[in-house]
Amino acid sequence: MLGSISAGYKLAYILEDMEKEKNPAKAEEDQVKQSKEAKKILERLANSGDDYSMVDLRLYYPETDKMVRTLNLKAAAKLNTTAFYNLGVYYYNQKNKQKSKFYFKVAKENGYDIGEIFDAYLMN
Image 1 (cartoon, rainbow, N blue to C red):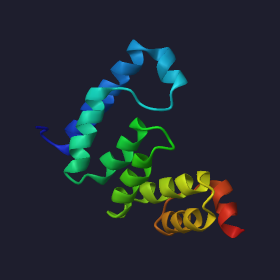
Image 2: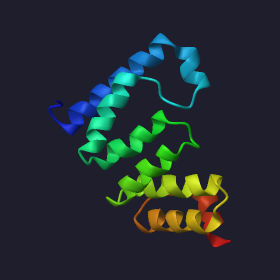
Image 3: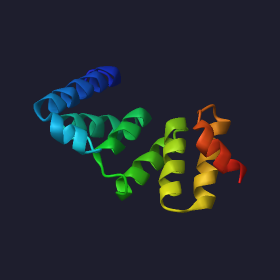
Image 4: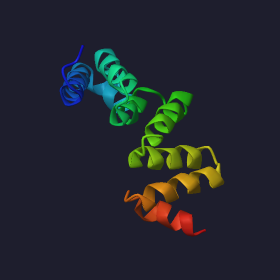
């Protein structure tokens, strides 16, 4: 059992940093985070309803994995602006223009800086 969300978050980041130090070549090669202990902590936090943990937990899955979408949808349901942006990117990569624009627009309307490229994409 974790004492608090912030303590769990900090521990997960420490564990992930330790994992990177053990295997720096793999950390550079893979986009997916590797620490099983950190992933378990984030899973517990996400299951308790913490939307930021849901967004970070997606980093433990390959970009095209359906869990990336699922975790971001759960976080977006809690109005997490990063999740809206991530869904925009997810659907952009899936070539779903309608959904990607929807999520980018929601992220932007809620104060998330989507960047110049996706801002221009919204204008098309």
